[in-house]
Image (cartoon, rainbow, N blue to C red; front, side, top):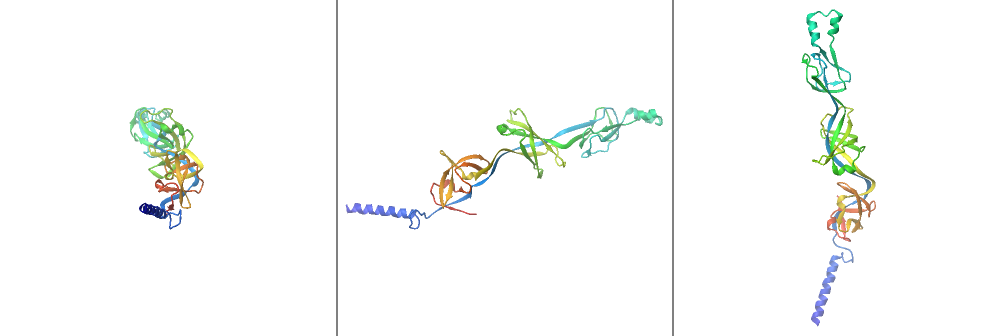
Length: 307
């Protein structure tokens, strides 16, 4: 009997000793070790969900200039890259008949002068010469191309919009456009049109916008990065995505209060790659754990690590 009493006392003393080891320095409920975590305050701000697609610039208007009559090009001084204004004389064509008359007569009569009058070709649009097919002195047939002129005052921006985002993107939405070849330039415009059909191979719909080019820095076929804001939540409570955990009961976070991690159920809303909107369960300024939260349990003592 005495033996059993001694064993019982030893077990009781061991349990008391373990309990004291788990509590602090002899004070009940005060842990000796704390879990190191990182925490940040809940902030108030605006969260945007964005979609990035890619596209390129297409000419809005390109025209090929040719003569309606056969003849020899008497004057053509423009080169590729030169700018022209609408209505500007860009070439002068002398007809074969005029050349023959000039060789057969001295051109002193008014009749001969009228017959030898050259044909002036004028640019139908303003822009930049992108191709030169013929040169001064060349003989051209009627309808043969001489110059190509591109109107670069604005361009069509074309991009492929994934079909999954069609419900969130609409005509008139503002888009931000950047170009890898123009890293310091940012352009803003609005969506002008979205194709009514989806490409069955890529499951994308063509999106088009008009992009003004007042400084003439944009060029046709430039590769573009298009950023579309598909959703926006202003004045929202924001936490890092790493702060939000999930289990069968739903979303939750750990809030640090007086060195203790408290599990807090939350309702979340819009999120992007780095942040999540919290609709309920938190208040501005609450300190939420963003690193070390996977190992936590409700009521654990924690020590917030500062950078």
